[in-house]
Amino acid sequence: MKAKLHEIIIITAFCGFLGVMCLGYLLLPKTDFSQTEKRFLAEVPELTWDRVASGKFGEDVETYMADHIPGRDFFVGLNAYVELFTGRQTADDILVTWDGRLVEAPVVWNPENAEKNMAKINAFAEKVGQKVDLLLVPSAGWANRNEIAGPADPYTDEAIIESVYDLAGTSVRPLDLTAAFDNPMLYYRTDHHWTSEGAHRAYEGYMRLLGREYRGRDAFSVETVADFRGSTYSRAALWLIPGEELELWTGSDNITVTNGESEAIHEGIFYRERLEETDKYTVYLDGNHSMVRIHNPNNAGKGKLLVIRDSYSNCLGGFLAESYEEVVLVDLRYYRTALSQLCAAEDFTDILVCYSLSNFMTDTNVVWLR
Image 1 (cartoon, rainbow, N blue to C red):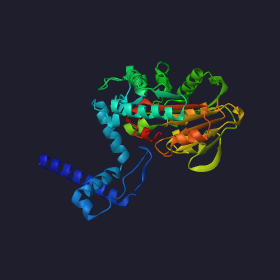
Image 2: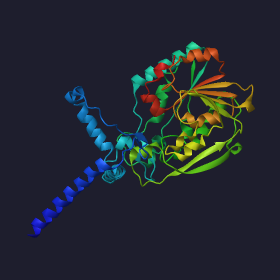
Image 3: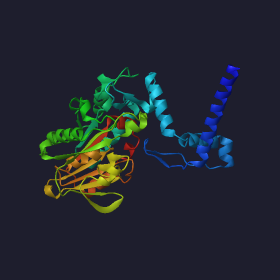
């Protein structure tokens, strides 16, 4: 009798759980964007005969149900912690260090993509007829490699960067700052980017290479912003990991910014309204844009810099503007006009290609460099 009662309780609880979940699907409001995961959720799938016949409709329904399950954040987080405590924490290739930092898995050497991207950079340098500087930034995982419990593959950023630089032509000047970035404190704990300290170190190293004046750390006023949680936090779904501080370094007080999608002039390099949003990292230059122009009237006559870049330069750009009259940042993910035409129209003093090593190994947009 007791056994039968026990079975009835289990069945009732299970059916009750299913009923609550069904009601949740029907009655709870749906959202288009996940604040914790920083991504758009699946939309209601379109019902057509072709999609049903191909099986695509069923796949989309499954994705939609998973994205909009009631209590999604709780279940996603629960799954992440179960995998972590059972030694299977590999969600989206995010690893956890001994001191609670979230880092991406090791960069994989991709000779085909490396050769293709370097061939485009070499050809571009030859076409514009001037030296092009190349900076590849090692990953946060590499800087934390001694604090990670048994990654499936070793971190070989140094060797990969050296192999890429070996492919540089005579018109490309590699900038090796790998040794300078062998420090976990130059990267965020919950994000894959370098910190403001890390970006300043790259700025200082690049200016030293060029023999240009630069502003040291003491020349900036530093403001800290609490409770920052970045991209690796969103991808790992380990929601109990605390936030961290994000720093805003202010130098010149009359810098202005414009971007390729707007003619409006923005005062200062920081878009402080972004600090009220989930993705606080977009406080730097308003995030990713096809083209960004930073103008510093204090440096009149000190030249113009072109930076071909990924999101690492959102933070770096403000520092570079401390040594040039104008810095133009171009993101090939969105910019499709031939850059050689831009170089012909504008007299750039220097040209820098700056990518994180991870992005450079996987990027398919460098082919647009022409």
